[in-house]
Length: 265
Ligand SMILES: [Zn+2]
Image 1 (tube, protein in one colour):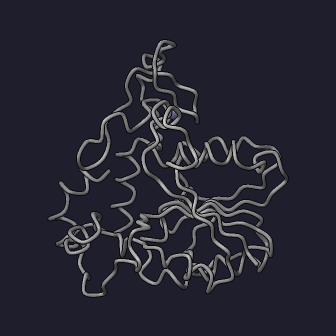
Image 2 (cartoon, protein in one colour):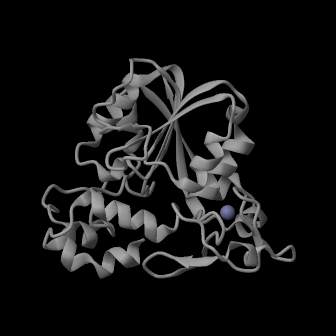
Image 3 (tube, helix red, strand yellow):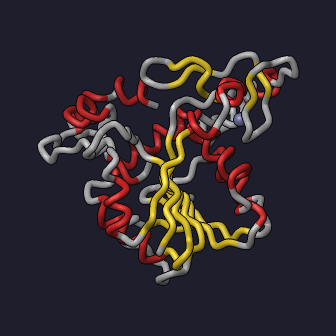
């Protein structure tokens, strides 16, 4: 994803490519829309790595990201570390997959979307700003959904793409029922007291330099909790390092990752 973005940065900077096209190419590059044709070859019962989403066992996963992070991407379902952490959390820390829930999934990752759509008890809908294949084609700041209509919202690596993220968080607060939950994943560094963001980073190249991605508007710090509280959420941070044993992190290839469970008051 990021290496393709880095290669294209001059084109992006010249604004010769629309933002929607950038995201479409990211998805293709991640392989999350198309499963690799070679997938069967990677099934290796002796493999020490295991993808908890698709069950693949392998000696190695594929490299991924700007620096070619080793063993990052599952060769079968295309999951990277954060997808596997989210799936592991959903299946082991919650009973949600077995409950009757109205679920909204923003900018859905295909490796997870396939699994969610197969759940007979979920009323699942995806929402995306650009992808016509989504159930709902809409901006997160203006959802065509009734107030309090959602039990669970999954929003992973979406909020950092939105210039006015507070408006999006407010809208999530509006459509989530009291007691409902939004699971948030974003670029998050709890060592930062305040979110790293600056309106002066107003070009793709400046944002790439500041946040590592031409269409990221920030890296969140500990004050994300306050932003969520303003919209009526009590947020708790779940850290992969605390929640998984070292053996699990090695086996499932899950790096330092955070997710926030945000319960609507
Ligand atoms: Zn997999």
